[in-house]
Image (cartoon, rainbow, N blue to C red; front, side, top):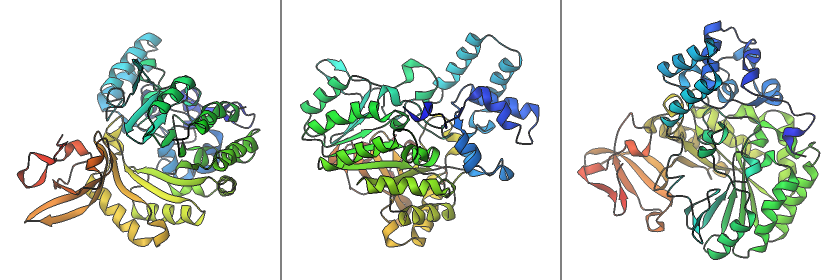
Length: 433
């Protein structure tokens, strides 16, 4: 039985939004604006997040409230007004959906080549539920795992959750996945992602994971999940929690590295005792917890938040992994932090933590060429520049090679940057824009 069908799990969706917002001193117009946003971008939370993680006395500034509840600024004001007018006028559902679709198409729903450059082809067939951006890594999107226990407002995977089939990445063709991997022995690492694969029952998750253990070239398996933060009972008291941990043990016993890629955005998510118990149980299975999350304006854009997050996850036996830059999709204009300020936050937080927590890398942009890390701001040959390098790349020859971009205080994404020193490109094979 999956968490979503567990008797203790209670989800809240847009139809519950008005009632939940009665806890907050908002006017009717303000509530309508938030409903308007939730008719375009996805909203889903659950009773654990609402009752255990949000400090309602601090709303609307509470970081987990901002992390999970729509904000009016997530859409341009004309779009908010348009959707609000439709909702207030009880417009037909089809008209509301058409308007929402038009707005979504302007929000760059699939950045960085997700629906063209990243989709592999095998035996003449596009495997639309897989992503193969880097030679050694394939992402698998199980069809049954394309939702989450709660949705993050900043999430770059928002198109998975809006009910438009053409925007969704998903597969249940396990045989085709295995055939593709056998034909590509360079693939050593699989990331099972979503959505959140851990909304699935262990029985269903096993159908995707066990076949990977019969492919010798697969040496590591990663599971991308927010469940440790948004539903830690998945590892403690869900009906198949013990079965899930036994599956983890089987993967580790096969000689493979198993990593839970845990998304933690704010230290507030680590404070309930059940989270610590869940992390202990995962670690006892032999799996490694690696923690990552984006730098998000209004939620965690301070060195204090990141230093506490990295130190606390390290204390709990997890490994700080990535601090990401908010991607160029959806509400990036609302949540994005300029690269210069983002690096200053990263640097200040990094300077405060012990060496054990300095496994973290960032700020990192998952851009079209690969994972671009902002190493710092410097003056070179009399010009102020960003120093950068690619941690990972479509072209492996670009990995680890430093390059420079002209300093731009307002730049929030890789495509905002221009090569320094009047050059036409950053590196051979790495173009601007």
